[in-house]
Length: 151
Image (tube, rainbow, N blue to C red):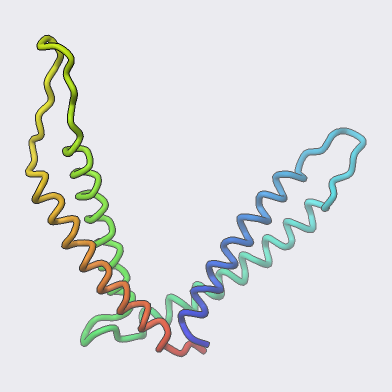
C-alpha cells in the first residue's frame, strides 16, 4: 500500500469518527418513553473500533514519514514540519497585509486617523514568496507519498 493511500484512509476514518460522534450525541438523549433509532452502546462500540483503526493507520504513517528520506539528510517527517512552518508564516503575512491594506474612511477631521506601520508591498511579496515555497515543497511531498510503499 502506498503512503498516499494510507493518508486517504486516515482522512476517511477521521470523517467517520466525526459522523459517528455526531450520531451518538443525537441519540444520547431522547424523549421519555421513546427509544433511540440506534442504541448509543452500538455507536460507542463503533467509535472505539474506528479509533483503534485510526491509531494503527497513524502509527504506520508516522513510521513511514520518519524512515523515508525526502532529500539527503532530510526525512519526510522533517519536510512535513517545514511545510507546516511555511503555512504558518504565510498565514501571518497574508493576514498582516490584508489588515494593513484596509483603507480607513474618515467623514470629518475630528475622526481618528489610522496609518499603516508596515510596508504592505513587502508583506505581499513575502506572502507570495512563502506561497511559492509552500507549493513547491507540498508537491514534492505529495509525489513522495505516492512513491513510498508501506507494509
